[in-house]
Amino acid sequence: MNSLYQSSIKSLPLLGHGKVRDNYAVGDDKILIVTTDRLSAFDVVMNEPIPGKGMVLNQMTDFWFSKLGHIVPSHLTGVAPESVVAADEVDQVKGRAVVAKRLKPIMVEAVVRGYIIGSGWKDYQDTGSVCGIKLPAGLKQAEKLPQPIFTPAAKADLGEHDENISFEEMEKRIGAELAAKMRDVAIKLYTEASEYAATRGIIIADTKFEFGLDENGVMHLMDEVLTADSSRFWPADSYATGISPPSFDKQFVRDYLETLDWGKTAPAPALPADVINKTQAKYFEAIERLTGEKLKA
Ligand SMILES: Nc1ncnc2c1ncn2[C@@H]1O[C@H](COP(=O)(O)OP(=O)(O)O)[C@@H](O)[C@H]1O
Ligand SMILES: [Mg+2]
Image (cartoon, rainbow, N blue to C red; front, side, top):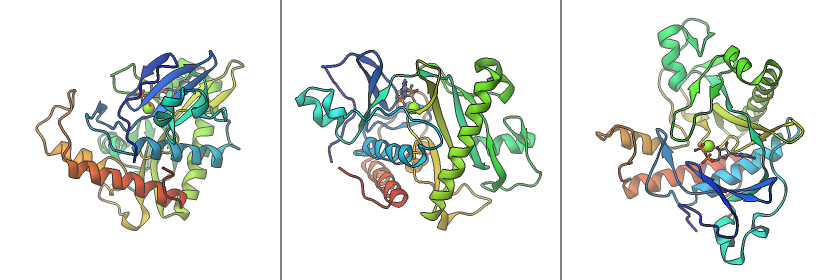
């Protein structure tokens, strides 16, 4: 398994390192997005790679782009990543990169929740609502909501946490028309994806989409889509209410970090090999269960 913690593509101008992805300019209208094996937990990037994780995320996203492409266009250009880098850089992009349209990111993340869990569960216990949306009384932790809800979050500046905002605040920031369109598309994407995932024995409890506008103002789905990093996937066979069901993601890492006396700010503590291996196995299992195919390495 070729592992990549940070890319170093010298043949293209670096636009920046995100927590997980490295972006490079390809001409002035495209970007090369390399999904590395970095893992962030509590918004802090760990020091060790999870070998192959970036490939899993990249291939999961590709899978969903093609499945959901009839709902909204994606940022994909179809240009092969191998064709835009130097020969000795091909190893860094193989199986883990895309050449995307360079879009103007909409600075609101589209969060859709089908189940009440995590920060939504905390919010509900305190207020009976999630991000200002009133919910029926008496819901149990991890219970399925009567219908999926849209709870936008303002995209944070580098190193900051995203901040939940009301739909009204979203309308103020990006305009009522675009806000409604984003909400409707996000709910459709979530609904169709969850119906498919159910046939594979996976519950998508919640997820986050990012959208951007092209030069004509057309909205595109971008970034990563319905991955174990941007979503909570629960194996249907171990789902139960009244608990936080086990999920296909960084749970081992989070559980391990919770045992430490660590303030959840950088620098991250070292991850034991056992935690890294179990996390890697979860990501691999997730893509296999979801797509029915093993990771293409
Ligand atoms: N097609 C695109 N055009 C412009 N920006 C994009 C596109 N796709 C993804 N991005 C941005 O690239 C970055 C990806 O890096 P990532 O590691 O996910 O960052 P973050 O730490 O912000 O989550 C994000 O800021 C995302 O919004
Ligand atoms: Mg991201």
